[in-house]
Length: 533
Image (cartoon, rainbow, N blue to C red; front, side, top):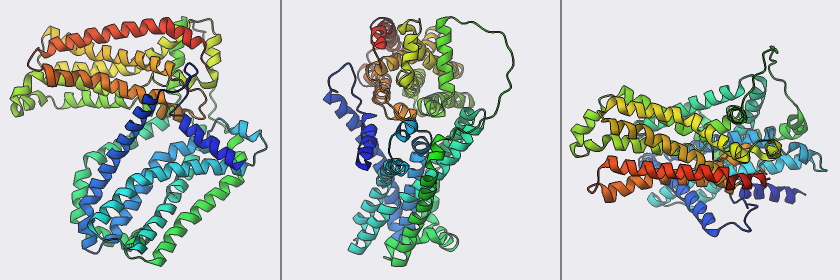
């Protein structure tokens, strides 16, 4: 039984990416290769980033006798990445999983259910840990000769380290579940705090070079302070660098004991945690006149309510909107940017506005609200299919949601470009229309892709939003649609035609594609939608 549960859990994780469409007998091998290549590219990028960081601090620290600080920093970074990457998944897997009632109706011990979910979360943490500790170990081996004892201790720490972030994720996941169920505007609160954390992350990334230089210049003082005030962190690194058995035992105990306590508490109360319906803030009913809407307006309102009720949906699919707004505000604040551009690169000054327009399109391509919209219907798909509304209108309403969320930010960015640059009427029209039409293209294309690669057997919405095949393909296609025209013009047509003429050609092509996609959704898309599920 335990083996069957584990197999089902990992198969569900695999199937979240390589979903088999009911309209095709088998998944195209080229698509699997493309997804694998993209995943390897992302992993390789992170390995390079962390490898460069550890390469810059390895020799100075270890040569000065602070090898323990080097490995402590690696452990802390691995714990942080594991925690950030799995805390929301822990909440959805342990406390908000939609298959809790189904599994508990079967003769399956609750401890087995909890154990299989913990194993899945542990496997995810091992993946994040690999991204950090492998570059740290490789950089050390390149610059210094490792011993057999050091390698054995390093592998031992690698084995037990993910228990620490998993313990923290369980605690914070439980807190998030309790808080989100007891507040009225939980979506707004979760989204707000997530954006605040995201803001701190971007601030840290902008300052990372400064912090790195400070760390290299003052690592001895930092190391002594950690040794005196946070001795447990010292033992994390000393176990590897000094081959200290006492430090290794302390590290293992720090990993196992808190995890064991949390696991025992969760196992003892798992049925209560999974089945309790927590109370929420009561809203006093106020009688209001009933408002009637047209079917299309009602469908759009339904999509807006679905979108606004899911912090995971908002944060993962709409981050590009925040980036577009940040870009627009930055242009308004730094109004002298065109003059700086002309001064530093006078030959490229005439292309400043096309570059801004291309950048707006690229930022818009990072928004994929429409990509998982069909799959998010899940088991409730039949409700919409039973309504006396046209299936094409249902699909178009999902594209409209994308437009309603993204287009205001795109227009604001276009207006900012118009304000800070001197443009002709023709250039102003292109600056407004091209990013807007491109955004509409992405909205329609996301629905079409999701219609061809749907996934309705998801356990929690995080999987279908972040890990589904539809979302991955949509992001790649959107970015390609924005980047390829810019590359073609920059490499082949820069000296052949004016940028405005090429932008007009792109506008015509995007408009024609939008018309074709709209027609497809209203005709063939309508027929496909009728037989989904």
